[in-house]
Image 1 (cartoon, one colour):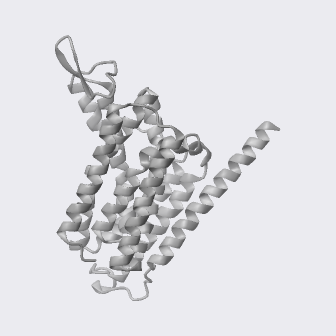
Image 2 (cartoon, rainbow, N blue to C red):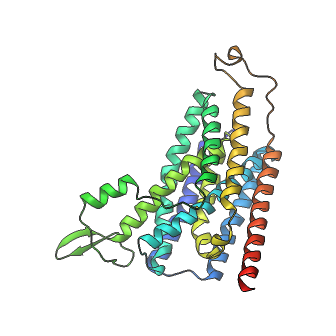
Image 3 (cartoon, rainbow, N blue to C red):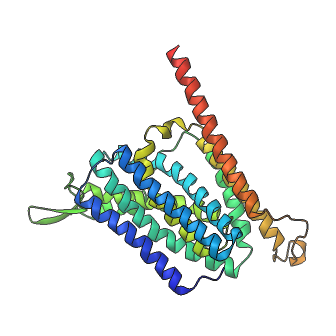
Length: 326
């Protein structure tokens, strides 16, 4: 996929502009978004993602469009799991409800910048060392197993950089609206909001350790990887307020995501075998019997896994409610 520099620059400028406009609008009027507002904005971001995918289809073909949609759906589904942790962070730090939208958005912007670095490093590693797919694949399989074993035990510790900031810089105990710093008795102090956004940004960076290898298992095009991450993060704030208690009803989400990550991990290992260059495996030659999983099959598998997980979770929740009422 030949992506000219002007398209890269245009995409970064456009997406950054959308995020900055959102920050400025919300920053002027901190509030808890209504369901209608969240649904409207989320529909807009989803619509933009679909239009982008159709544009990729028109200019570059169905295979690349399928890679984008598969990557976008995967990043979005992994982002839903992120929301569980975001809820815990907001509760632990006692963030006022009307400030949570701003905190989420600023944290997401930080995460987007950091993920951009990860994407560039991943692309450089893949370009120079094809065997990195083995590492990505095995890491995703390990993550899938760990996700099942740790189900229900997510209580994220404060990231080390945030602990360093908290202990080395002076902080106020009180919020000053959505400001990251405030002045008390002539001294410039950080506010709790600064701790909140740093924690959200650094926590999402940790999630990128899973999501970036996962999407590189679906497409090796750095441009599509970046676009899928941008669109997934763009709608994350709206999704947080829209689905609310629905998160608690998705009881099988961790299991569904573990199956999804394991599937992509195996796909990556098979791809690495197909392009094998490691001298101690098959004499450094490609392993011919290793199949390649086509893009369409990946897309179908992602939709089926997420669909079954959601339906099974809601049926289980409905049964539990009936049992509790009876």
